[in-house]
Length: 171
Image 1 (cartoon, rainbow, N blue to C red):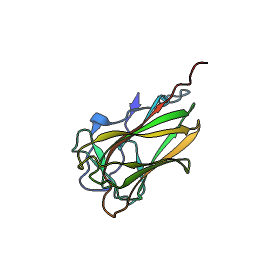
Image 2: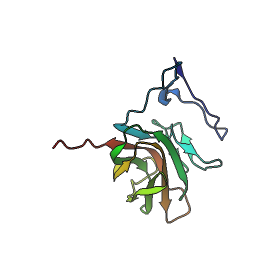
Image 3: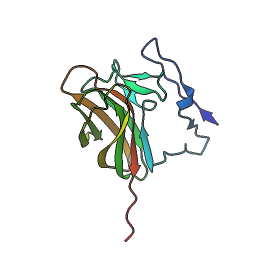
């Protein structure tokens, strides 16, 4: 048995794209829901949480959809309860015509990554860029991404961040 969680959109132009919907197993009596695959964590427009009134919007007409209208300093949040945690390589997929943007990642209010992003040439020219590595603890985590720029306009379009857990070296 599965449930599909649908939340109300903030604008009149949104619609539901089930192709990328996340199915979350509903817990049966006495059985817990299936946990995240902690080897690769995906922070995407589909599982992000926005503050009320946020200008960030999912652009569903793109394939795959991306989060756009991201203004400098705007925070986007993901919550993940990890059983194991570990050290992760962090990669972002983004597009921006600007040369002066910086992506920051905080885990549980601690800044773990802050790196400048280079221009991809346009709003629709997406690039995957490695931001570095960070440790994510085994706990109920709040992961916040802030995309900053020196100007007041939109920073760029965001498809997602992948966190790939590094395997411990064998002695």
